[in-house]
Image (cartoon, rainbow, N blue to C red; front, side, top):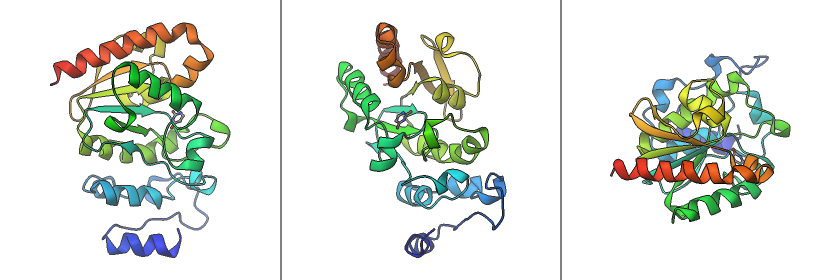
Length: 224
Ligand code: URA
């Protein structure tokens, strides 16, 4: 962590954490205590993520990708992890998949700025590989706090990695979509759909994704 980030965090009374010298980088002891994170407001949480060195991904990232959108949104979109474009720009879903996500939201009359968008991981896995379980363990507490702060009416999980990690199940995505799940804590409804990157490769499944979006809208309306 650079000195400026350290001073910034210290000024905000945020505990500073770092890898121990020679540590493997995936031990829970390197991460901030879950209790600390559970009390942070949006800005201190964002600063904590920006300074995070809890797993090896901090050594390869260009920057962290915290999340974007309306911090009072009713809709939370959860994806997998930043890709190369997101790593460069510091914002989730800005590449081709992001453009399709924007169109999917637009089909529901939702602008990107009206929802909140975040990922399971805040740092890009090199080569866009799947997140490792230890990385998810370290990182999910940030998303958990984002969800608690946002308290959305609906969570739309896009893709297998997002859905399985949010819901802690290993059901294949094809069997998860079309159903309503519940995220705990908070009893927040979750609808699962295909990842936009998958839909770019398999446009024949866009119709199913549209059905999922309509289900999500119906569930969100019921939460009004
Ligand atoms: N894919 C994701 O799951 N998240 C992003 O932010 C970009 C691509």
